[in-house]
Amino acid sequence: MPIKKLTFWLMTAAGAGILAWWLLTRTGTDQIRVILRLLPDLSRPWIAASVMLQAVFFSWQSVLFKGIFKALGFNVSIQRLLTITLVSRLIGYVVPLGTAAAMAAFIAIAKRDGLPVGASTVANTLFHLINYVSFGLFVAYSLAFLKYARVTPGTSAIPLTIMLAIVITVATAGSMAFRNPLAIVSACRKAIAAAARIPGRIGQAGASALHNFSSLEAAILRLRSLSIDPGSLAGIMASSSAITFAEVLLLYSAVRATGTWISFGALTAAFTTGTVAARLTFIPNGTGVYIVSLWAALAQMGVDSTTAGTAALVYRAVTFWLPAVSGLFALRYV
Image (cartoon, rainbow, N blue to C red; front, side):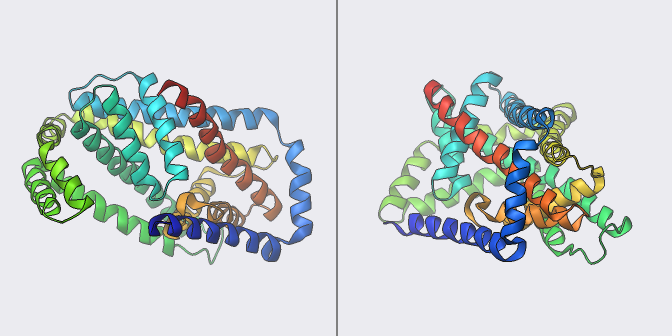
């Protein structure tokens, strides 16, 4: 078995092990039984709202991609982008190097629709960069909330601080590159040329990329027009912020489905803390770890542990399994 596949499954098993350890030692079997009894009694309107918000989440992702592609000079329908996004997300779930695999799948599917590889590559890179920046705004808000509201004394803000530092670094580097696309073109050309000289599959891939570099160069240079168009840039940022906001509201719906109320500040702090903790563990797709981190974060925000666990399970089911099933249906149209 290739080393990357072995690592993927070992890390996934480790995440599942963390979840099993949490359920058996931190919560106990009695609390698990209570949660299982609570699940059938959850508020159906709030569950329906969480499903609708997941649909909104992917719709806004498609709107964001459409805005980026439009800025690059391509008009792609939202419906088509939604299909490509769902299928690429599904592939990212089951293939090692999830995010990279999802991007590669997106680019390959878009190529079949006539979109140049360069444009899709730049669009995906810009998409993830802008998403990082918008998520960083919610992280900054959470840090401010934890500092001034003091809802849970002793709550650790270290993971949020680390993530904010990463976001600032990425955003700064991206902004500098964004303002000088010629520097990006030059750096990419040198990196691809160096890869093309490496023997084996890497060299072959590099040679192929160098042959098709003109498409990537044209897409990168189009970023210059986006940087001088504040309206388009503001629209793209607004779409990205709406994506994260939909995730926060989805978690709110999961909590409200249990009959519990939580303030927006505490909710956002729990969402960002749980999300960041799962990301910093580097477990593929946050398997197991996301439920544990979100459960603990909600409990730190004052939510009863049983309620927090129920909400975390509902949130994870809607945000992971629902898109996976939707991706399977979307495969019919790819």
